[in-house]
Image 1 (tube, rainbow, N blue to C red):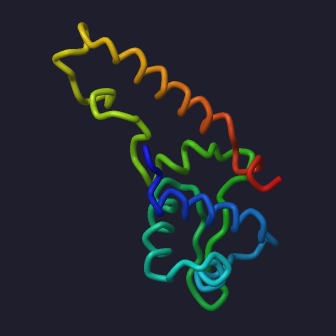
Image 2: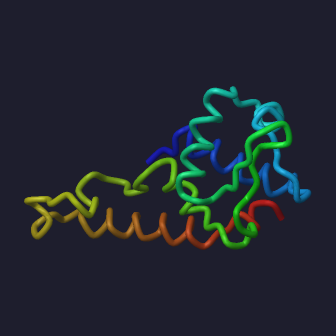
Length: 132
């Protein structure tokens, strides 16, 4: 499993918003400059996070973005899933997929165990943990 740039950048954006929170909205340009991400790509990531309700947005001259909740309320796993979708290490573990070999597969339990470890880890960390 590899986390794409969208997932990595989403975490960076959320950390940036948490670290630079002064009660005001933070402009897309400011985030982009600090994080070295193009405005166009950042807009895509912000849209994904905003759709999940992770951000508050304001338009206008003093507009921008800020976290909708306290950093301790965001699990890293949820942020990654917002941009990556599933974090499953293999296709046959997807909930909407069935595997004809599941009952006889000697490696299924291994992959399920890896999936459990990944999800337990990313869900045990919060945005607050990352900014400390």
